[in-house]
Length: 592
Image 1 (cartoon, helix red, strand yellow):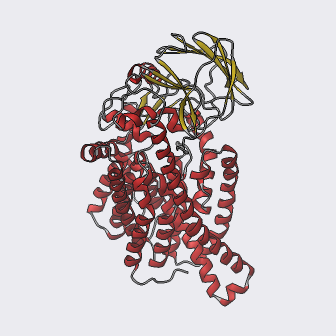
Image 2 (cartoon, helix red, strand yellow):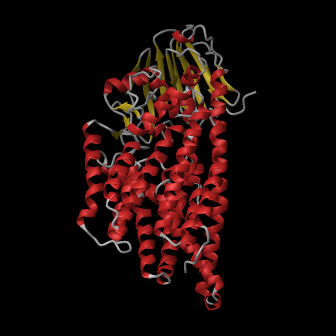
Image 3 (cartoon, rainbow, N blue to C red):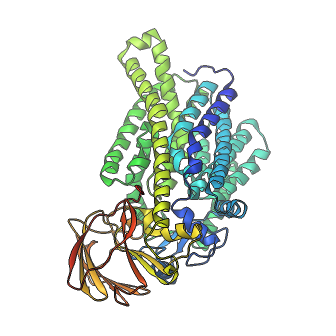
C-alpha cells in the first residue's frame, strides 16, 4: 500500500516552513488569560507569592489562600473553599520567567520564542515519523499534523507553551527509545529517560508521551523483542514524577474543568467518558473542538460523533492492515494504540483541540494510512470496481479534504478569535471608566461578565500597561442571561437571573463542581462584601443572590461596571427599592 517519496526531508522542511507561516499571526495576538496571572506572579502583584519555577499554581487548595485570592478577585467568589489548581511544570515556568527577564512585557517576542519551540518540536516529530514509517506515509501524516487545529492554542496562548515543550522532549525520548530498541544504540536508553524527565518537567503532557512508550512495547514494534528492561527507564521517571507531584501537593480539586484521577477517580471517569469521544471525533474527523468548546449543546453532539469516528475508522483499519507488510502492520497497530492511550492523560482537562498536540501525531498516522489506502484503491482497477474499494476511495478522499482544508481553516479562524479577544479585553481594560488616581483604593465590581478574561484579568491588563491595581476586582455573575437587580438597602442589592441560573457554564465550573453546590442560606464573606444565596435551580445552581457591602453603594471606593461591547462602563445604582433590568454581558470586542 505504501509507496515511495523522493527527498522526504525537503518535503518536511517545506511543511515546517508552511506551519510557521500559517502561525505567524499568533505573534501579534498579545498576552491572554493565564499569561496575565503569571506576569503578576513574576511582578510580585499576585495576591500570593509564587516562585519562578511554580507559575502554574494558581491556587494551592488551602482555605487561607483561596480566601485571599477571592478577596482580591483572582478567584471567583463562588470558588470551592479548597479549590486546587496547581500543575507541576517547572521547566515551562522557568522559560516564562526567562522571557520576562529578557523581553519584559513585549508579548510579540514571547510568541516568537514559542514559534521557535514549535519548529523544534515539528522537526523532532518528523524525524520520528521518518524513522518509523515509509517516506510517503510519514510525510502525509506529518502534513496532516502540521495543518491541524491542535497547534493554535499551544502557539497562540503563552501559558500553553508548556505543551510544546513537553512534546518536543517527549517525542525526542520516543525517538531515542526506538533507536535503542531497534538499532541497539546504547545511549538511547538513557537519553530516552532524560527526554521523558524533561517532558514531565515541561508539564503533565509528558504523560501522553509515556503512552507512546507503553504502546510501542505492548505491540512489539518491528524487530524490538519484548523485554522488561525496556520498561525500566520511563517507569522510573514516572514513579519519581508521581512522588514529587503528590508530596508537594500538585494537582486539581473542586473543579469540573480540571479533574485529578487520583484524588477524584469517579469524577475523572465521568469526565473521561464524555471528553475522550469528543477528542476522538476531533482527531479523526477534524471536528473543531476549539470552536465548539464553549457551547455545551454542540459538544454533546460531538461526543456522539466520537463513537461514529471510531466505528468508521475501526471498520477501515483492518483492511488497510491486511495490505501492509508485517513490519508496517505493527507500526499501524502501534499508532492506533498510542493515539487512544495518549488521550487518557488529557481527559483530566477542559476538552479542547489543544489537548491533541501529542495524541494527534499517532492519530494522523492512522488517518494517513487510510487516505493512502484509498488512493491505492483508486489506482487498482480491480479494487476500484468493487464496492468496498469505492468506499475506501470515498473515505480516503473525505479524510484528506477535512484534514487539509477544514482543519487548517479552523486553526486560522481560532487564531483570529484569540487575537480579537485579547485586543478587545486590553482596549476595554485601558478605556475602563475609572479614575486612575483613585483606583488603588477602590473596589471594582462588574455586575455580569461573559468571558474568562473579563472575569479575572482586566486589573492585571492595566498593571502590565503601567496603571495601578484596584483594591479588588469582583465579578458578580457569569450567567448569560438578563438579570433583575433590586436595591434592597443603602449598602445592598439582589441579582436574580431571568430564565436561567449561575454556575452552569464551563468557565464558572472551573471554580466549583456541581456535585459540591452552594445551598440556600450559604454566605460567602469577602473583604468588604457579604454574598448570600437566596434561591437555587434544581437545588444546585444559584438564581437569586444578595450582595451586601460594608459601606453605602454610593461610596467613592465602590465602582460598579457593566461589560458591554463598547467596553466596561460605569453603572449608576438607583435608589433603595428600585428594580432595574441588567442586560446580558457581552464580550468587549467592538471598541470605538
